[in-house]
Image 1: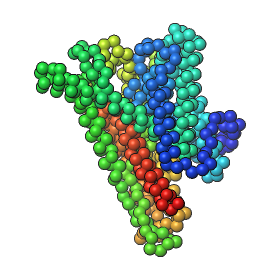
Image 2: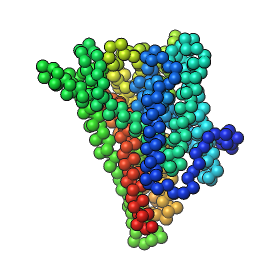
Image 3: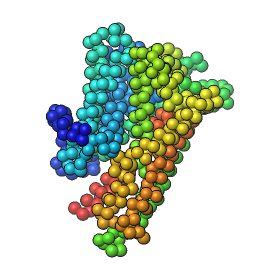
Length: 478
């Protein structure tokens, strides 16, 4: 098993690859590449799959669309699921010593190539399962040729996502492609559900999909202003003003907690008198805990759907979860969606409303405990597999000839051990708690999707500030 990576070399050489830049890419050029990548992604999000019947079958993954940066019936149907699953799997295998990765440039290249290879394989596997399990209708009705074309479109689009992410990772853009895709998809979802000027015929008459537009429309068209105001805040099956307010509140909470940190004083051994601080943020592992949680939940839901479609009466299927179609839009004759109604998939999915806290308290309690514990465990696991554990940080500081002020060089590990594991676990639980709050209160895009979007946007803000500062410094020194 330790020699697994070298054995993949012949396959990796045949994979498409983005060449690393042979010069330093200036800030404006990186910003341009980032915009191009985002434009390609958004176009794919709105480009429908050829041959897919319109409103033919219910959406099986509507409640995970934002967190997976996917869009129903388009080239971005798979979203980032293959690349996130492959990345996390390879990191965990490496962290647990199942795959040995040396610090040499060759080994790191093999590891990145293996991750890409695994991601491409997952693109084809998931595309095949999507089609075979009847996501777009029974294969017997579609025909073998059309089913093959649909699956090929999904797989190729998934490979394009991997290439775009590699383009960003190689330094042409700013940040990672995964961050950009989730942020773009989630922000588009929030803006659309808040300001969409699309009119919909419902049982109550003509309404607008966007919550803010609907608020003004109801106030101007209804004679009973009090009732119109109440409906704007509480209407069901369509976004309402309460959802928008909660979304803004959650956004503010996440930004507020991003600034929580403990700064440990350090000093340089080589340069006497020079001091600095080493910050340990509350969100020490960033949003990796929620990304790993997303990968876990999405894969459980995916395979539960596969079992439900092929073996609905099987015992394993009932344990994993049964699904049924419901209508979540107020539009008459609208396409339904698939939601879990029992089994593991049901209990790890967020309650659909606050009413479920009282009608099914065990589901709500299980979901809360599952999110908090999972995020905390994933956060602590990530510091071990990503090289950000106390011993790793202590070694990095020693290599840079830095020591904790007031402590010996050999005591840095014990000092960091008092802060980093606590920050990782508590930060993961804090993210999980915000996710649960957002889900229960009805934030647009769901708790997970909104947290990913806000943390990624905040990271982009920090990266852009650093890039601008770095370019300004280069210009002054040049």
